[in-house]
Length: 424
Image 1 (cartoon, one colour):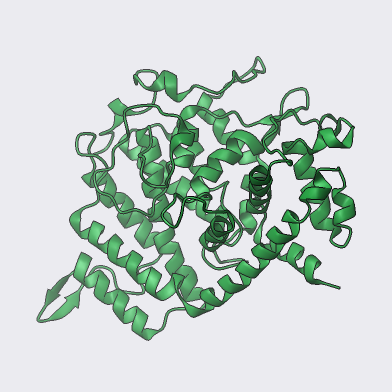
Image 2 (cartoon, rainbow, N blue to C red):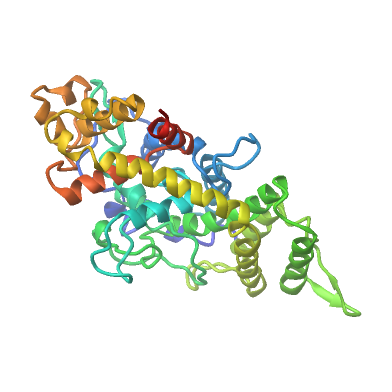
């Protein structure tokens, strides 16, 4: 029902509001502000460099050269559009919803989820095979927002984004790959860095819950469209898709499937529209965010179909081997520089690959205690007022420093650095 959630939206009347707009430190004002706290968060994320780099990061198909195939930044745009539509109809806070949506993937690694798994495998798992992942992109989005991404203040000094609690919470809790009916926000504010696994803690706000579901809605249809573009799906796949549509959304007559959606009609705009409408018609504040039984089954079966026919396609699997070689080579190369970093000699250790060396040294200057080794106030020369996050004398901290640096790379830049390393 339209405006069914208006009484639980995140505004001044909501008992959670004071916590939701809390920042780690007070944010500066210009004396002429017309934006709300959540609008400020939206524009701060929109202008940060990690958001800009999403245009050259994988969504599903690696380093695409086809301009009409979805990259990570277009996926983020889809999530923002879907979540705004749902929030507006249900009567929730569109500004908060948009802010979470625009920033939810700023911590994504190059080469999509394959890159995420590669970086996680490179981090030492001291606790064994069942230990929590050490690198997962939802937590990395929070980490980048809190410690890495900067904007210039009115004096031209680069400072961290300093987002509100509600937006930071939405970033780390946005995992949408887990099927769940009756999604509701949690009641209590928590230390967001106490969250150890993706998908287990629900967002603090209804708006965060909307983004979590919109993430799922956005990728299912578009991934099918891109698979068609690259001729990934064969005739058997289309028959299977028609059967899924008929069994979950359609009816049969005289043993033949009849559906308002044929296999080929299951595309981006059709799926997004139908799933949005279904969610809006079936959700209430009392019961939570719900899809109808038929659409819940359809989403589950469509995800199974996509994993079997798209995400595990042999062409993508072959590129994953290449991506692993690329990221492991960059990682091992940078890990060898630790002794040189401790003596302020990164350029000397990386003179054979100057592009990688230059950007990595800039990273160390901005985010580690490397600047103090140089004996110059290099961080101030770059106008950075950011906390020292990494200790180059500590092995585990230096490893995290390398992993985080790599996670910020675009697909193309990672490939360029790899080629620089292996070229003679």
